[in-house]
Image 1 (spheres, rainbow, N blue to C red):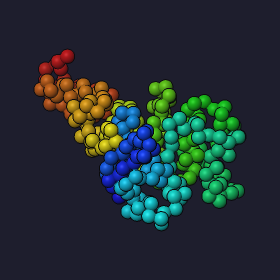
Image 2: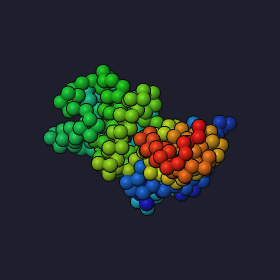
Image 3: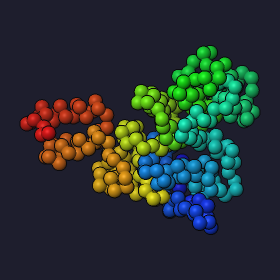
Image 4: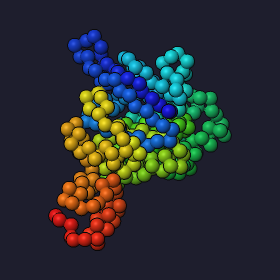
Length: 289
């Protein structure tokens, strides 16, 4: 197991009138190379959980293990851990601060001691990974980029640290549909080509159903469901009880199944669902509306 939370609890502002128990005995595990989706309403504990994975937050009780070792045992170099397990916050463009894109992307590797040609190679490759041309962007101010370019530049700064895990906390917040689609395609590409472990925190059920291999569903600081997207979204009543919706395409397939159609409900793209409906239509009477 690459990352494991065991009976994890976290309390904000303990001992004050504003004390909030944000996580309550959470146990989850993430295997190397997985694409994990974490969903839940605002305040459900999603962001609190992922900030424990690289030691940004310390548990009130319970353990966080990376490669089987408790990161708070005193033997873990938390700075190195945060290079291995990188976190991109909501509105990642707010993490940009240098004069040029090159300096911004180079900031992390330079702090690790890289200089000269090695540093340039690292920056060049990171920009290419996020599909920003090195020569066209390296000398530009990050503050003069478009919204989508800023998020890619911020991602390049993360990738320049050569992480094993990238955690994305609502990375497409505020983006238009085209921008969201493009950015998530980039994440999917890096997961596949760079063999990254990806943890995506999101409110978008359609996106997470399509991308993730495993889902963790949170409510009130507790894990209420986990499994593949097909397994999780088959529990429609539980999903709606915690204030979430199942993807519209999944709901359509489930309604057709309830009407007696022999139809798959584990499909999450328009193309797949369209083909399945055509298959069922061709095999019998017309589908009821």
